[in-house]
Length: 267
Image (cartoon, rainbow, N blue to C red; front, side, top):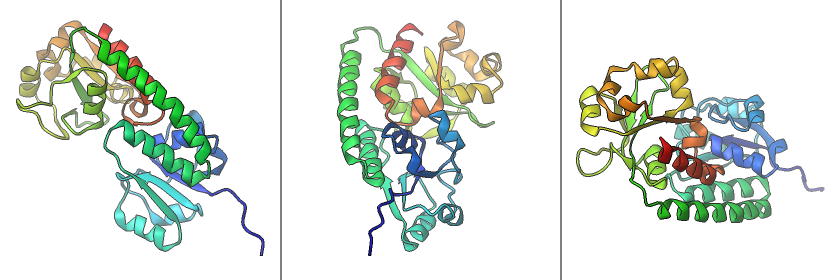
């Protein structure tokens, strides 16, 4: 009997994983992605399986994937179990907001796509870029900016504490997260309050481009009364980047850290 030599049919759940598929030249194997998979632009035209935390087994199985590659943020678990029961390989990459997470994503996609050699070559290049940008940040002798990350993709506006992707990014660029540390710091996200803004006193606001758009533009964003209590408000010191680029922990991370560090230095 002849062996099936067709390349594996892939579904990726997580924008960074989808980016890696394209970076490895395996996009022809991609039969579906989740709604966070917005980059590169071609990924927006792929069949969508919904949001990563609310997947449907029926929708996924309809695409007849050989492998589903996701992060540990994907779910619900019962859906992943249904996929395994149907004979679909499910690879889950641990999310811990580290450079090692990016490496694990590269390796998982390389294995799933049957492109391990290409994944190793890409990792070697990205590892070198990461080493160089980390050295650049560590050598910077200027003052650490006090930064507040705001998540405003809905009517509920929240700020980022410890153990979040935003907090990790701030540490990578040598900035201080005003919502982290021993004095009133917390983990995860909390609603933005006037009292917290006055106490935190950030010099710079960091947010996503999508968040600015959701709030109705820059002018509307700055009209939030809580922000008027911050030093950042006086100078309109704000940096925003596309959400997947900023928080996705994908192959663009070295370039993103380099760019964000430069933006913060001049904010």
